[in-house]
Length: 236
Image (cartoon, rainbow, N blue to C red):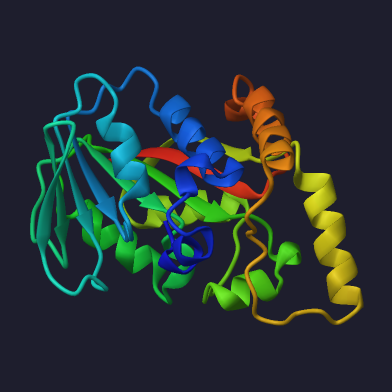
């Protein structure tokens, strides 16, 4: 989770429709894998690791982010959640890169770096913002380098040493409204660097969550359009 957005939400990410939906989509994406140990790359606050630690059978998670001031340890329900500025090797059986690759110049290099740190067969879940035509001040604010199509992110992962198992888009139900809003903003030259993530009242927050929840049973088959591209891959 981006720490800039965590600051906007004031520690309420778990209740916000956007992160609640993305967390639920992540759980759906790894359905049946039953990971025991997680390596969360560019983890920020560790939001997604915390979600996976709530799953039965998961025993530990390590969050890696060079932005941490110091290494530290926490316990979540009696399970270790470790925060590290870097790791040399990992025996994790699931690696997360949740909205990370769009921040770096060498996305293939970062994938290759972490593929080299884990055993063969380890699964990766990667999410990135979708479609360059949706570029806006939101991307500038979050210091993105690019947005991706499914084809582009899958090509990056293969070049980094991973085999793609499944790729899809999420937030498809919100795609038409978001696309129209961003294109209108661009036409009016509104590209100021500011996040489009907002706190909402209980009713709109619930409505947006239920819209995304309705998409969850089907999103893994969606290769057409969405605001986020999500890929399940494995070290080849």
